[in-house]
Length: 233
Image (cartoon, rainbow, N blue to C red):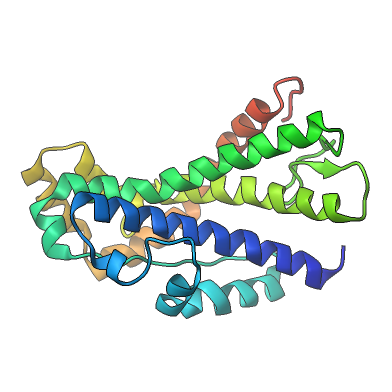
């Protein structure tokens, strides 16, 4: 597969995943009474409002990371009213969970599509699981080969986003999600503690080191759920 075609598949999968993640946040906030993201146009599967808000994270960083490593890294963000989050910390916690929850749904949906492709005899399980090779097409060229790469990236990328964002360190969703499971006063005190720029930088650095040990076992378990007839290690 040519590098340009491979990069395009990567970018479509990444942008689609980021868009659904942020629209999940925005939809949950709207349901909880905060229309900030709705008025910004982010309760939508249209990627343009998300690109306008974070052009570096959604366009430049993916292209730079792909040119340097052959993989894409990116991010997006959703605006919300901090006064609403203070008054309704439980709702804010569920808003935080909605993004990773959307990623988990994409893992399930892509896994279902993979199994359908195997049943239709256009896909098969690979001998070795890679980030971009969770399933392979029976033909090495053509549209099914492209779809196999897309579904592989979609499956692994969203599993990674799900695990990474649930790490309970600021500024990741996992730290904000704490408010959904504790008392409101405790949630407010915790949010005041973690919502500091210095802690956010430390949290990103710590999460970067944690994601490797955390993701490996989760990926192995997910792949073996996808392929219960095999025993991938």
